[in-house]
Length: 167
Image (cartoon, rainbow, N blue to C red; front, side, top):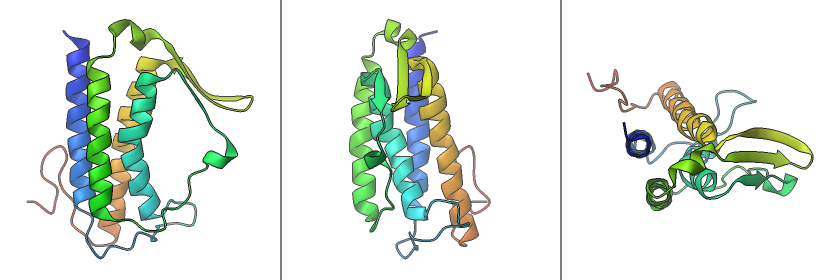
């Protein structure tokens, strides 16, 4: 099995499904809505979904460490433009695909860290970070977007077969 080819195919599949979920956002959706006081707003969630597939994934591939500072704290997106979000998503996914395809196999065993000052949040192999903090994280937040849309009464696309809205 060509693991690199499999990882590229999986990333392409999961980002395509994530893009379908982002495309499902209605033009009139309230991006400030959230289902619970401790939840992200819909706008922050869809931005985070796009960042996970984009900048986070790219950083995982091309860097060995990410340092977080309080200035990096995510802010709620004040205005979401769906077309701009999709364009940015497409651009970043293309960059990630290129980096993923040319990553030397031995780099998957390299250490990757995510730190905040003296605190280490992630310290694992690049491969484990890719699997858990890129692919699984992407699926997790895509599912959250689906739940948000369902609660708001909007149809959702199927990801692993048709959704109830498509049957």
